[in-house]
Picture 1 (cartoon, rainbow, N blue to C red):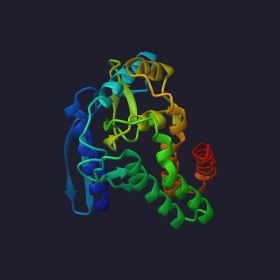
Picture 2: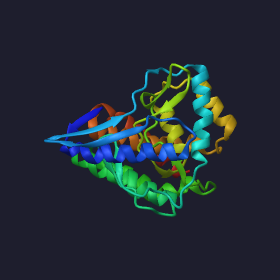
Picture 3: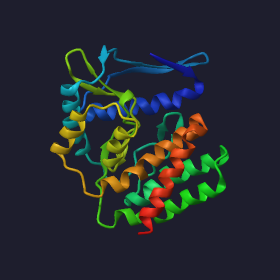
Picture 4: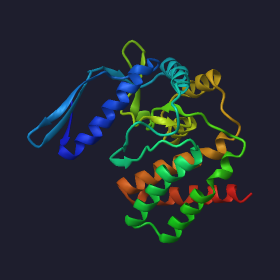
Length: 249
């Protein structure tokens, strides 16, 4: 059971929606949603209890293959049927047929606006907005599909049960470029190499992935700056500078 104040109810509802989407896809196991509600000033979310362990090499390989199958589940456009959250940060998911537009306007631009409110140097914010204005240059030869993505795939949101079955949880699902999940899986580490090898074996990556990876991870680093403070400022600056250099080539 997860609990929080009444403000957490919207986050719990979004998490339940993501878990239902994963269950309907039926390719990557996830905890079963049981119930949610409010009691007095307390909101709660009840999920299936599972005994979890860290991914080993076999579990990582099974998860990599299953994630590729999840990404082959596609939606009508980029976005989602409802808005949700990345951590505690609101995430708008208005559907759009153009992926660079969606990612720029509904992912990076809102985070940069929050970053300015939270004390980021306006010059660095302006540089970040420069990335948003030009990011279409990273997609000249690449047309991603609107894949069903987990949306918050760091190693703390993946594990295996005692039978070795891999699971994912705490989703922030939407239809987006599959590379977003893979980029975040690399951002903080923690996934066994077998995970990456199995995914690429099941569905090889486009050759431009390494160039786009910092774009996708900039979103999460900006979110961490907005949630946890200045420890992520230097990393955000380096990503922005790298992306601007790539876009000016």
